[in-house]
Length: 227
Image 1 (cartoon, rainbow, N blue to C red):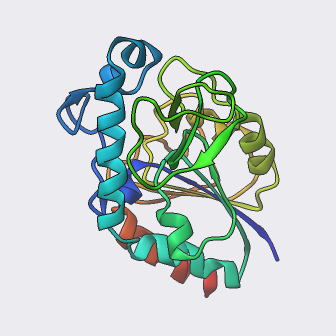
Image 2: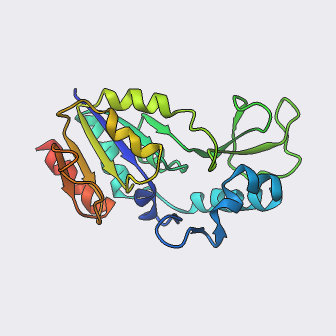
């Protein structure tokens, strides 16, 4: 089987009803993103940050994977599929994908504020006073603005193995995740699914653009890759 590496972003989850913040005015569910997704925001107002992610966690339980998620899982019948996602939801896993790397953390996990390696599965509200085994306050297991992306090297190594690269739901404008396209071997076919494509054949001669939203674009991709 060939290695199919898929980079996904907020656009694929948006079609399940999860809000994004990069499409418009920098607000995420009415909040300035730096208030709820930065170390500074955390230190300034921990209750606000905890409440924000508690609501995101509750919202995640109310939505379902869409057909784009399911089509990517279906491709495991034909390829060794590895998904590298910027999304913190678990919709890929719920759709049936077996190899998912979350670059920016996971909404259903929390970690110690003292020891980043101390991570717990967490499906309910996280409150002030919830402590890890090290007696430190727990925080969302999310990579915030200004923090390192610890799995970036792993993601780069996975991308290097791609026989085919697919990009869906991300504009490829957000670094460091956007740099992953540079790790594919020369000549690797790249499929970019986006209604407003931001990359072109000038910089990537083996690029195929599918100028559609995730659900429609991934449906077209499956026809191409399984025919």
